[in-house]
Structure formats: C-alpha cells, structure tokens
Length: 481
Image (cartoon, rainbow, N blue to C red; front, side, top):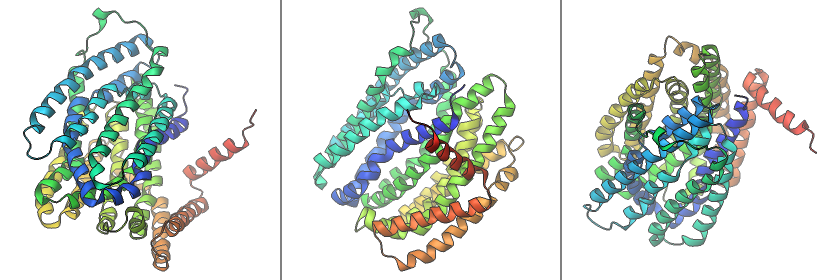
C-alpha cells in the first residue's frame, strides 16, 4: 500500500472531471442548440434507461472494486475475481437489454431515442474501471478518458447543429461510452494470469453483490426518479430541462468531493482486511475535515454566483435554473458527508446493509415529497425534495456510526470553514450587485471568492490549506532532468 492517497485523489478527481468535462464544455452550446425542450426530452428518456443500467450493473462494480482492493497482493485472486465478475456482467447486460426492449416497445410514440439510449446499457459490459480502481491505478483511467472525452467534444461540435439532432446526440454519447470502456482493456494482459476454468464460479458471492445492489436501488429512486416523476406529473419537457441543467452543474462540482471516496475505499478496505482500525479512524476523520474544507465554499459560492452565471452559460430561456441551483447547492454538503460515511466506511467494512437502510429512508422521503410537491411546484418541488432526502440519508448514517464517529465531533471540524465560507459569501453577494452577467464577471466573482476563502484560512493556519500549499511548493521545487 505504498501508493499516495493525495496522488490517487488527484488522479481520480481528474478521472471524474474528465467524465464530466464534455457536458461542461458543451452545455452552453447544446442548451442553445437543443433548447430547453430537447434537453428535457434527453433528461426524461435517460432517466428511463437509467433503471436498466442499474439492473445491468447490479452492484457488481462496487463489490469487484472492494474484492480487488482486499487482494492487491494476490494476482491469482485478482484474476479470478475479474473473470467471475465479467461472466456475471454478460448475463446481467443481456437480461437488462431484453427487459428494456420488452417494456419500451410498448411505449406510445417514437421509440428511436430509447433505442439509442440503450447503448448506455451495452457500455456497462465493457466498463472495467473498477479493476484499476481496486488496484489504485487511477492514472491509466485518466489517460483513457482524456482521449475519449476530447474526441466527444470535437464530435459534438462537428455533428450537432439543430434541435432535430437530438437523436444523433444521444447515439453519439452512447457510442463514446462503449469506446471508453473498450480502450482500457489494452492494459489488462499485464495484470491477469491464467485461472483454471473449474476455479471460476461467477455466483460465488452473489448474495454479497445483491446486498450492495440494494442501496443502489434506493439511491436511484432519489437521484433519477425525480426526473421521471417531473416528466410524468408535469408532462412538460421544459421542467425537466431546467432541472437537468441545474443538477448537472451541482453534480459536476460534487465530483471533486466524491472522488475522495473512490480513492479511500480500497485504502480502508485494505486496512480493514489487516485489522488496522486506528488507520481507518484517522483516515475517516481527515476525510470529514476535507469535505468541510471543499463543500462549504461551494455551497456559499453557488448561492452567490448563480444569478450571474446562468444567463450567459445556458443562454436565454433558462432563468428558472437560478433558484434550482441555489436550492440544490445544499447537496454538495449532504452528499459529501454521506459519501465519507457510506462509501468510505460502511462499504469497505462490509456494512452495506446499514448503508441500504440509510438510503431507503432517503428514498421514501424523496418519493413522498416528490408526489406532494411536484404537482404544485414542478422542478422547484423536486429540488427541495432531493435536498431533504439527502439530508435524511446523511443524518441516518451518522446515527448508525454515532459510537465511532460522533456527529458532534464531525461538526466541530467545520467551524473555521463555515466562518471563511460565510464571510466569502457576504462579500461576493455585495460585489455581484455591481456586475453584469458575463463570463468575465463570473470569473471575477469566483476568483475573488477563492482568494477570500484561502486568505481567511491562511490567517487561521488551517492544516489542510497548508498541506495543499506545501504540496504545490514541493512540486515546483522538484528538480527536473
């Protein structure tokens, strides 16, 4: 376990950002070309296919990553896990595609966009990023995604020119997801060894896989069902279009936070396998502190900057995205904390049943509030429901781990970051009143916020800030040959 956590974190942040860099770069273009109705149609149809993507995944990736992490020092067990997992994947993807075709073919209207969305189900078959995440080989994933996403950006600008190109856009995204998975297979021969056929039992730990699948079902209910319910209840692709754009920006920022979970899961799984409980506790408390460090300025920043950011980024007709972004900004804190507790602790320590319990609470909350609020408030109601549901999940998880990681102890670590974040927000809120909505002015607001936040933490001699500064200085001073 000599691999650097900070280095792997940077790799994984890069990996997750690259997964999302295409929508970030292309969103201003696509929001104008496809218009709110086109974006809403994409969002609704993707919400439908997401349930079948979930079925094709069945928690296998989380289980496989954990198993690879447990056996980082054993090439035979790594290889056996790889072969077993991929056999399960073939069966699941086949069953999911068959079920998807059976259900969608009975929908009324044009089915073509749904068939293009099905490419995302096929892409699950070729995605083996879990293997390299378990080995903490994040650099290879980053390189793969850089090539694929760069190609995606070029193709989107080259091929998508009018609202009628929506189907072409959906097909392009699906195909690039497939190519993204295939490209990393080139690295495999270096890691795999021969495993006798009689030793391969794909359903060896199927009960564990199902246990890890249950929380994913619950998570899906309050991360995708809201879009489905907006489409069904309101009957308007516009409401889905507004919600999709607001959530997209928030989820992009969350990448920086949740990437830590992917890095820490194999590290904590390895420590748990070796009964190193002190290391687990130290790493967890550092993770909570790091989440406060990142999410509080994001939360205050989104509220302050959204009214300046939305008009120039999305274009005319997306004004309703502003309050949606401000409401959903609370997700960065709630999901950031629950990611630490759930993904970094409950999953690697084999307590996925408790994780399931927490997300079931959130799912019930989300479904109930969606049913009550969407008919009256549309996308705004769905945003409020999602935020409350995530808060329920976070609080439920803290109750579960209360004896090991008391909530009061975790909250104590937020003091300096809250002071710095709130001060930043106050200054930015006044500052933006004198600015118009433009890229330059949004950049000035964001840069000012970063400087104010960092300056206050510098004066308070914050350990995380100084760690980051020392890392940067050491990189600059490192001799190059």
